[in-house]
Length: 174
Image (cartoon, one colour):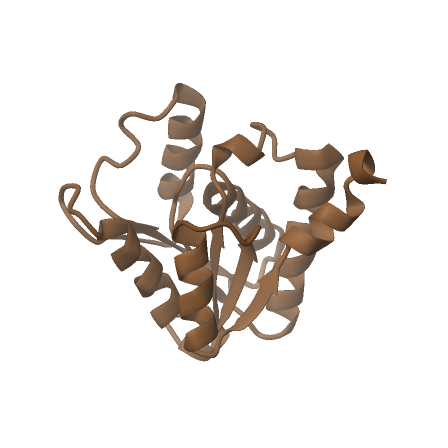
C-alpha cells in the first residue's frame, strides 16, 4: 500500500461509546463519517484499524460501509491485530463486531501469535508507520491514544482529532 494514500485510526475505548456508535446523540458517528469521506476525497484509499474495542472498531465498520457503497472498489480496510486472540475476553457484542470486521476486511495483519509486553505500542507504531493521516478521538489524557497521537505528530502525519468537534456539539454542555 502507498503510505501517502493511507489513513489510520486511534481513539478511546468502549467506556465512551454505546453499541450503536450514537455517542452524544450521533454526533461522533456523523463527525467520523464526515472525516472518513474527507480522507477519501483527499485521495486516501487504504485505511488501517488497530481493532481495539470502541473507536477503532467503529471506524473500521464505517470504512467498510463506505467501501460497500462505492462500487469502484478503491477503498480497502487493513485490520491490524496486536496479538492473536486479543478479543477472547471481550463481551459477546464487541467480539461479534470484531469478528464481523475481520471477516470482511481486505487484509488482516496479526503482529504476534500471543500477548507480548509492548504489543499494543507495536500495533500503534505500525498504524502510523503505514499512514499519512490519522483520524483520532483523543481527549488529551495519557494512554495508548496519546502515544499514537504524539508519534503521529512527530512523524508528520495529517491529524484530524474529532474530540473537539464532538465535544463542541455535545448538547449536555450547551
